[in-house]
Image (cartoon, rainbow, N blue to C red):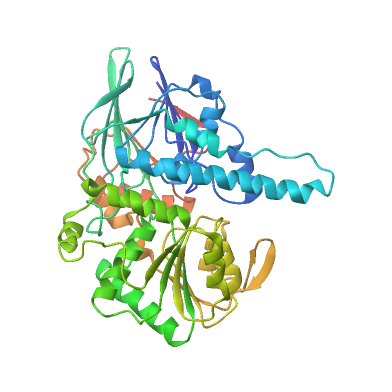
Length: 464
């Protein structure tokens, strides 16, 4: 059996790992690569082998950097099942359609620009119709109930606590009289967060693929996060400014809204309006409401006093473009939460273009921003950033709050992995992390008694 790493290899995006067995081929995730436009286009252009030769996909969760190439996979010939949880299936239905819409709009914009130069038209990576078609292949599985996607392969999903429906997985492969267990963390969530349950322990395995996003990092303590949020909103409102929060439509937006709901109930928010300006986030919040089976005890207890944890008097969800544009013409203090979290697409770009140059405003970064994204440039507080190809002075305050990250930090990840039988592990692969973060996590894991981890390069293969 052979394992090849085709995505999230020494980078934090585009998760895609290929396992080849006698009984067939499976992908663990099929994610869109996000980063520099030209590099991303090249990385997303083709698959390591013809999609019709892929027999199944094991999807860890709905984030686009893990699921976003599924419509293209189907468009190019894949017809096998995509195994995932009920909640992930519902999220993907909204998110992949939204991604297809963005691909179509981006291609149309480029074609209008290039048509003047007489250049050939480009085709979108995939369309909304492709996204709808691949949804027909989704097969829902339950946590803790093993299933068999191929002859000689059994898989069990467990709750990863990362976003709604997210899963870790252990693959039990039987081949040539051997039984090999392969563990894949997907993205691991954090313990003691609101809304979702804590990550469930993984079963022991022979080979481990683990995310490494926050290797060497420790998040701000959870108990300080809410007061930090209240302070930033209060200080910005007192300056007469806006708080602009780029947030992933899945998970991050709902957690920020929940915390603002708490602060509103506690009388700790200034009397300013709050807007969630993202049609996708509005749809996703509705999906959150449909899956209370994923909620943790804290949220269930909170809902006994407040049955609508994702809504309060001064909160407005915005779908249409006209209402979104009005936010940028208003000079009143407000909070605007909008996608995407890395500031690479969507309405957030318009809000940043209209607000980053005003020192009264605050841009609050509440999640990981990959290299070469606009979000990362804002995190680095560069004096000038380019938005829609035009330079803008970054005079707004910048607040970075990793306490709202849905990824475990290094101590949390080590604690999550700590119960595994280290003597059984033959090899540990670090994926979904920048090289610096992987080096830090690798040193910490070695010190904790794990076999020395290795960070595979894109296209690197290993016989298991």
